[in-house]
Length: 589
Image (cartoon, rainbow, N blue to C red; front, side):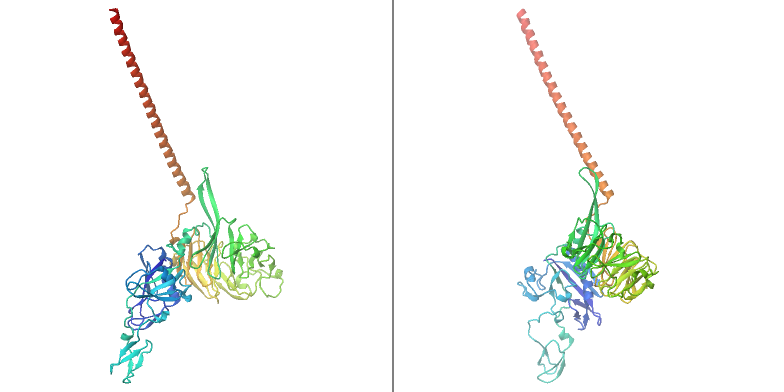
């Protein structure tokens, strides 16, 4: 079981003394003055973000520190251990706890509180199954300690007064004196030092955090902007085109193009991944439990299962009566009911999942759309518009059915029945018109990308700047957006850049901060091929030289052997000649 130990501390707002936060609860009490301090769920989320997403990637015994508000946390990757003797607690015993329990150490008999993650905290603690080693408090729903009732001596007669831990005003049953239990007695024995407690991860979480796994798997390897969408549960869907260069077996430079479609859950864990799709995706939308996908050269949308990414055979679109291949993706929007809205020839058109054209606005009075004159701007548009300005740069459906229309310097909102809610100006710092720059959440807030900022427009039209290029280190480049129902949002840039932000604009994830395998460029592939070829030729040349040297040595050896044999034969022949000459001379004599 993978676990991360945390030490959390804050300061009392009354006495300014440090407060150890040894329990995941909505309130903690100051051990000095007893005053409670509230800790909201969003503050817990901000505080535990680092331990949750970076904790699994830490080396054993590596310590990291972070803070949120007045709270500070230090976390380290290590197994849960007894608070008394530091003996490691059995992972099997922790996993068997379905609600909460006190585990007794078999070495020192100290009890450690273990509880499963409460339902109300499951969203704030993704991939966490158990909390171990918290200080038992009633505020966190801990079981009552097995101990005798506390008694306080009466200041007048000295008789014991039973203290139930709740009421501070008591009456002595012997002398009838009214007694107020002091703070020193109430808060005696409580831990006044910060102590470790543990976040235990689901067995599926390994030493790599979910975000790192997604990046390492190559999901964020694209060159051009991807298509992205978020469903009602906060799951992200992304379609991108990836490429890599390589030399084939014949030595020819080739480019491998891969069209991918994948999904991440809100904790950034990979839900599914599909590679080698037939064509790039130019539009992606969410409809309940399905995805609406439109290919780059296709007029027929596909419906895919949001849980697997596979086609849904019994819920496919019929052939539309209008050629959708001619519609720009930024002027195409998917309604929550599954219909597609787009602009064509200055008019809004709507296509039902059956492929038939349908009214743009539900329950609207019949009208002769041919008589509608194109308005000069969004400001002049009334309720239930059909004719729209030719300068329209984007459209988007929110999860509540509201339609958002965008021009270069303004955005207008229309509710689900076509009533115009507002039209606000955004300034003259426009964004790239080739990318989708509008996203909306469930509360009717719309997020608009500008050239140097990201603006959030409220449900009634009030606007504020969430992100600035100079302040938040965002690139001044082409980007696209996908908003989540809870107000968090994704931004996507070119070359695999992606960021996820909390509703207030706090950075939660950045793809460039995660380790990833390098995808070499074509120049680097050519350089590597040249270097490998030169190295191969060098090895071959060296082998040829060594082979020639070996042949020369063998020829030299054979020549030496031949010369030696010739010399021996010559010596033998000379010796025979001399012997024969001596014999002949002796015979003559």
